[in-house]
Each structure stands twice: as structure tokens, then as C-alpha cells.
Length: 238
Image 1 (cartoon, rainbow, N blue to C red):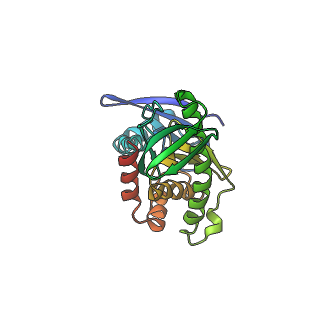
Image 2 (image 1 turned 45 degrees about the horizontal axis):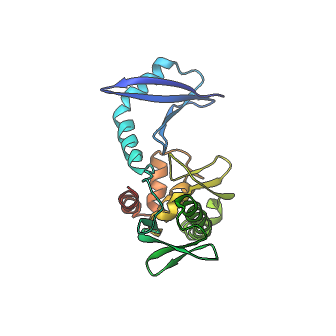
Image 3 (image 1 turned 90 degrees about the vertical axis):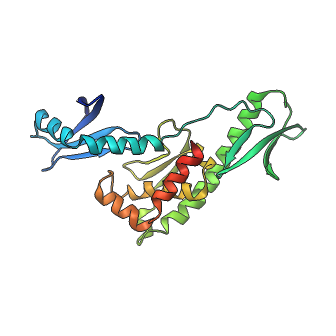
């Protein structure tokens, strides 16, 4: 069934939500990580009843949206010139660009060292640094996924069917209905404990698809300090 977009006014704000009709007895409201609102409603529920429920929960919906709005990636502009700072695993590194016969990017004593045939071409430096970040993301995310799966009492029940790394605009990660974990490439710039938080958060969605009480109960059990990790992620990646 397709989901239809509706909206209600709440103070100065408009709350938009999509309704998904399902064979169920109760109505469920979920605020997703991209701040969108989805409603799972019985086939027989009227639009007026659904809107009344949304109005009743409007204060909670706005709190959840503000929470997730802080969690959205905010990409700073970078020029990819020598001396500029770039994050890697929560630490700032200065970009050092040197002419070299062998094109390569590596960490050297507090620098992201870019050896390039074209040191005067920022677009070439950007392409090299982005490719390096992608390679590091694939390696580090796979490593942290193994660590995160081990937090659960039944690890194999929370092992995703695949790991995808991609540049995302609206979220740090997501778990598909088929059990594939998608992580934002930018997350490689965050501290390791924050990476673990995002991965663990998404793994919880394998058994709890929406951000209801059961989801946060599970997250709190497997990662009691998740709120501190979330705050660190927001502070470092702001």
C-alpha cells in the first residue's frame, strides 16, 4: 500500500505525516531519523481520528523531531588546500599536499598527507581524500560492526545481511526492511564510540523498526551510555 502525505498545524509549525494502512487493530506513530513522521493505521480508521491522534501526540512528535534534527549531518565546506583541517575518527588532521611521483593518501604524524602529481589542483586533492575516506570507512565500519553485534545477548539475531557505505544527506545510517545496514561515509570522521552508537542504534531496528518505547528499552540495555555517545557525535560533527 502507498503512503499518503497529510499535515496538521501545531502552533507555528506544520506537522507532516504519511499514513500507511495496514491490517492491524491499533494506530502507531513513529518519528524517523530524518524527522519524517509515519503513521501505521488500521484500514477502518478515519482520517479525522488519525489527525486527532497526531494532535494529541504533537508535543511528543516535535520533541522527537528536534532530537533527530540535532542528529542530522551538517557538511562543512572544504577547499582541499594545504593547512586545512579535516576530521578522521574524531580527531582533527591538517592537510599536507606534496608533489610526488606516486599518488597516495596516508596519515603521517598529525597530517593527512596527500602525495599527488597535481598539488595545485584542489579538485584532484578532493577526489583523492574522498577515495581514502571511503576505503577507511569500509574497513573501520566492518570492524565496528563486529564489535557492536557482540553487545546483544543473541548476536547472530542482530547481524545485518549486508553493509553498504554511501554519502548521505539526511541521516547517519539506516536499516532496510531486508536487514541491510546503510552507513553514511561521513561517519568515518566521527569518534569510534559515536560510530558504535550509530551502528548499535541501527541494529536495534532489526527487531524494533520504529522509535517507540520498546526500541529505546532495547538500546538502553545494550548501550546504557548511548545518550552520552549521541551528544559527542553531535558536538564533534556539528
